[in-house]
Amino acid sequence: MLTFYFLAVGILYIIYERLVLSPLNKLPGPSLAGATRLVLMYHEFTRTRKQWIHELHLRYGPVVRIAPDEVSFASWDAVKEVYASEGSGYEKTGFYKLFDNYSTMCMFSAITKGPHGERKKIFSDRYAKSYIMQPETVSGIEDRAGEFVIACTENLGKAVDVYVFLHCYALDCITYHLFDPLGTHTLTDAADRVKMKEIAYQDNLTDSYKEYYLTDLIPKEVEALISKYLRRPPRPRRIATQVMNTARRSDVANHTVLSKLLEANLPTKSIASEMLDHAIAGHDTTGDGLCFLMHELSLPRSSAIQEKLHCELAENPSAPIDDLPYLDAVVKEGLRLFSPIPMSLPRRVPTGGRRIGDAYVPGNTIVSCQAYTLHRLDERVFPDPDTFMPERWLESEGVTERNQLFFAFSTGGRGCIGKHLALLEMKMLLREVYSSYRTQVAPEMSASMEQDDQIIASRPKGQQCLLIFEKIA
Image (tube, rainbow, N blue to C red; front, side, top):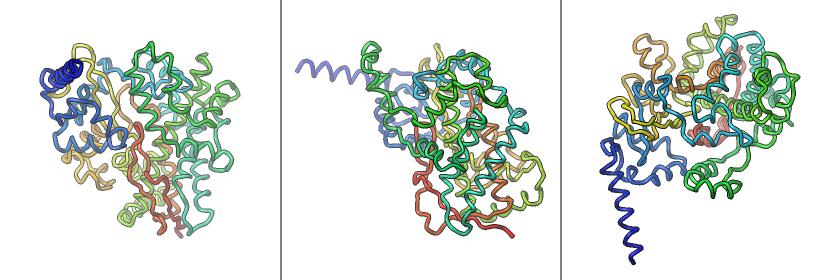
């Protein structure tokens, strides 16, 4: 009885401390979430974190306490302070250790800026806009866009599952950039396609959150003894094996990322971890982003947009890919409305605390922004935020505010290094398709295109997108 009494008192004190004594109690948010992290965990394990946080922002505004030690922000002031201010000291949290490969750090999983910066320095030039636009890269992407069109138009007038072929395209493009000529050929080789399917159809959300939370809760001494039971199932086996074998090779093209990693004399596991992270990230984000976008363009409500895009492409067949303003607007609007990484990107507030906008946040608090909300909350910047409207990106008024809140690639020194490659892949594919074809959603298409939360990414819930291609005379 005495034990129960002390336990009850202890729990009540913890709740009192979190709801009354904590500096975060001044911030808006649901009291239960401020008292226990179990509320947030429930939404994470049930794949509703993104939507729950968005609804909280709609109710409470741009600052919301979502857990006893975690705050979500949705404003340019917060983006600038947390992500864009170089040297500000907002390090990543242990959440990012989930992105280690072969039990080895990669750039994305590096917690502190030192190791991240050292790794990025090795190959950052391979992702620079000027490098991406060189003939070796452009021609490789263009070839694969052509292969995508061939695959989708073998039986004109019949439904084709572009979810499959878009993920094939994304994987073939990123592995070409990583380690040509040893990359995948899933668009043309059915045997190779199994590698894409292992990535595109895996679902380890529950196992990932279990690993994250149990590793955090269990003492380090105990963790060492039971670590093998905490780990998620390994990364997709076939692509992981190919990447590890390729990391030991030196017969790769000079334009590749691997050539730079080899020059740095990194351990083989470090090289493989880096390349596997780029391969999976490049596959997921570009494949899912294009799938959402092509589905939207193929709906009856977007027929005028598709026609306008076709006209621009058909009238400017030899224009540089970046000199097509409507194509650029279509891609950007697709990334705004269907951001492939719509989830929170957590950071830890430095010791001593910081002021983020008008809110003081104590040190060690987890803070984050999520693209899904940044792209919707402020309707002065994004009117009719749930409407697909490429024309908004062609308006001169409000351009600064729109670009500030555009968070599809995050921002700052730890933003997405593959941004320029992804944009090239998306634009090149859309040009190949809509210069010569119209697309419409197949009558038999019934799979859900609702965004399905993963760990930080989002994909079509039904994992199928049936479209019909029609040749334009």
